[in-house]
Image (cartoon, rainbow, N blue to C red; front, side, top):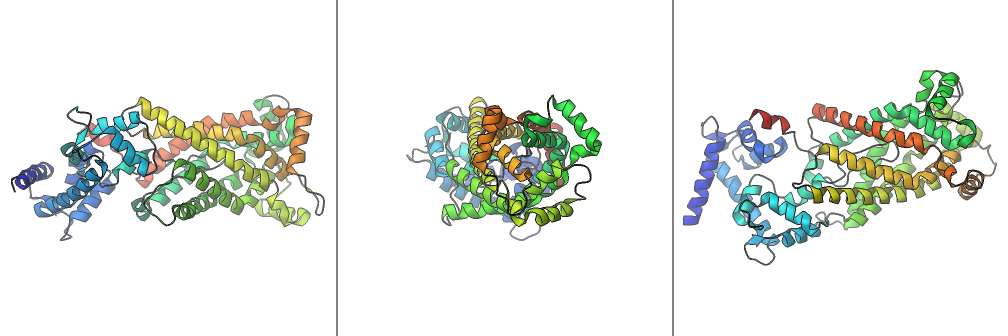
Amino acid sequence: SHQLTLTEKRWAELFDQLDLNKDGRIDILELQTGLAGRGLSSGSVERIVESGDTNHDGVLDFEEFTEYLRTNEKQLKLMFSSLDKNNDGEIDAAEIQLSLRSIGVNISVEDANRILLSMDKDGTRTIDWNEWRDYFLFNSLNNMEDVARYWKHSLILDIGEQLTVPDEFSEEEKKSGYVWRQLMAGAMAGSVSRTGTAPLDRLKVFRQVHGSTHFKGNVLSSFRYMVKEGGVQSLWRGNGINVLKIAPETAIKFTAYEQIKNVMRGGNETTNLRVHERFVAGSLAGAVAQTAIYPMEVLKTRLTLRKTGQYSGIADCAKQIIQREGVTAFYKGYIPNLLGIVPYAGIDLAVYETLKFAWLNRNRGLDPGVMVLVGCGAVSSTCGQLASYPLALIRTRMQAQATEKGAPKPSMLKLFHSIVTQEGVAGLYRGISPNLLKVIPAVSMSYVVYEYTRIVLGVDIEGRKRKKGKKKDG
């Protein structure tokens, strides 16, 4: 019983520290202030109060507080002993590495050591029960996963090519509506960044379709040509539908990803997917989303290339395509588009994982911050794009070709062959320069919009409330 009283004494001291106005109760604000330094989101603080508050008066009295800690410590004890494989009462780096591997996160010994050092108070390079308990006392229990969670593609980064969809959302994030806020923030960031870079996108499509014939010269002279043809607003042709398709694509891709993931896990909710499984799930989800919205892609290409007065709007463009070329025209270039998803998704993921570990190996601590995530996301999707660019070019050409009903459809391989024979391999990369120019502004815009949306929606990109401001005052 001696042990118990010690624990209770510790709890009493903690209670006293947290109970700022000394009324014998801890409310949400007091808890937030007291735990600000531990980097807890207000969501988790509210959850602590909710789960501890047995008589539902919205505050924790001493009994409720100790009861909460007692149950939480029980779970921590269980988790501690499950991690402590050799039962020596200490957790070492190898044990951390093993436990992360079991949730599908492969980390190196160095990474494990860094996680360890962030918890290791007494410098023994192992974590004993006291350090473990103090570190996780108020954090709910999925913290091994949280390490991994910082680094999930939780950003929906859109450089205007393919959307990357967030990997894993925890159940509580799904319940709290955080996921949809996150998808909304992503869609908004995408709309702004696509609109901001639309002229470069239009130039890319022109160069892809017309090769070197129409557009000799640099980016500026090409813009002059467009402005002469249709005024300044013509630089934004095709942008409307490009922005419109973000929302359905995000929603479909995300829903498909969740479904595919469940099938792959075989109904076992707890296991996370490994990297190669994420790649398969991501590619399949991409394929589903692209199939569903593909007609919008064709319309986007046609509207982007349109001459002044050619179509009065999206509906008119669709009507003309159906009348002249039949419904099948809406799936022109579908095959190269599907094939392009695989190298894109694969390289995007591989580069992202590589960068992530490079960062983790250089920096102690686990939270990379938004800037790093955006940077890594931008580099990885640019690499993915470079790899799948020839397929994207062929897709755009096929979409642009207006064939009469019943005329033979141009085949992907013939096109491929004719481009290489006429213009060499460089012909497959026409329009890549405006496309690369697009990346930096698109990413910067996404970043700024993310920051603002997140202030408006009150959600941190990593799903925690911001704690930067609080530290300064306290």
